[in-house]
View 1: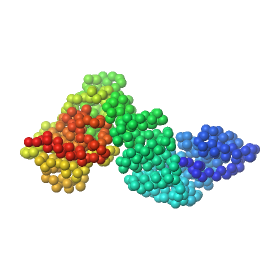
View 2: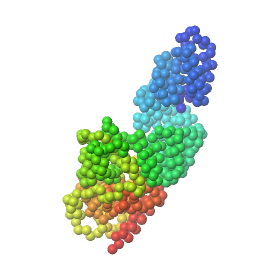
View 3: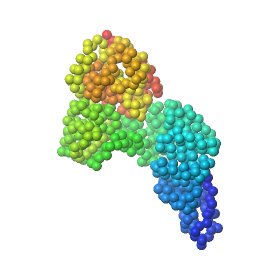
View 4: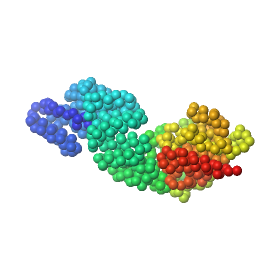
Length: 576
């Protein structure tokens, strides 16, 4: 909400245009402000402009036109207009506060803070300016300082619903979820039609996995504000986490109907379509990932002047750069497509992290491998590796099925067999945690402390984790039947060779699982209730890896039932 709606006292200053009929201006301005506050922006703008024709230096009108411009999305025009108002009247705290709002909307939070500071200096009791500065401090990541400003705004105005809601957002970012929920509820109590507070409350409840409550509050937000695209998106995500895919799809389609170019809605729709098995349409929309932050710039250095190739145009005698894009597991999953480029007459340059370089030298299709960061050779086109299913029009029935397509080094396999020694028991590889930075890691990973409770004693377990935490290290040291070779796993070629010495790999959804599947190794994968799109729903097999068996949670967070089933299957499969 703009400051003019909170604190407007038009002063009707005399214009330098001495010949204008001054007695008409107050009535016109009052009429324009009423229209503005009711949301009739175009009509208000016409009156503001009419006043300026009579009084070109009316700084109240210049300021209000700036507010209107910002509300209409033209934040630079807003800045220009409000600066003119400030030039004419440099002592109005509201002008500086709304200038700060426009700068904040333009993505310049530090400049915004400078102007909020000026507003507060002019009027230390200006609650809105404290709240606005808190918003800017959130953008700069100074969450504790932002909370101090919201506290001050609430002290100055105990009924300030926006300050409670915004403080709740900051608390939510600090994972102080219970406190955030108190603030959101307070905001809603003060302002019953506060769509943003209902939305924020839904977000907090979603973090606590109170999905039904979150759904109710996202629906409340949409009821109040029917064009609330973000609420539709988060409502869809909540439905997706409950595996209610049709409901999720409806939400994303509603968001897209309101805002066709909304990247989040289109990308989320892609994920649901892929999870439903509609790979053709899902992978088309999956290209929206490049327009989403932070996911859009996973490799921000990968900006090429060459054109992207997505299947259109001949590659005969051309060189195409295929580049690693997201996680190691994604590269292992989709490098299966590289062999097809030989049939297209193309030379492939594969641009990958050093950790996978040695292993991927075994790929069919003889790609030229370059480590990310090193100088690239000449190429004609480029293609992200996760776009290859789109390029080759992949369906559930046309997924390349030649497995294995990655091969371990025989000398390294011999090294591991020698290191492991005589095989007295079945050897089971374990991977219980993925990359901590992964957006869904808290749902897909498990704790070693819990896992070991379900491991039968009559097996030899081998940890496939690198860099285990200090807590995990203590557990590994106290279990003689779990071998830990983390210090010997220099890159994925070492892990691949070790996997080839095992009878089975048990893993959560992480790069180790994809590597094991690409090697054709028997692999059991533990999945959260709402899985990644590639595992689909309600099936034990994988369309991507024929050697996989999938173990799914029966309810969100329900790992114990998964591990109980694993325990039973281990004993049954290796029953001597």
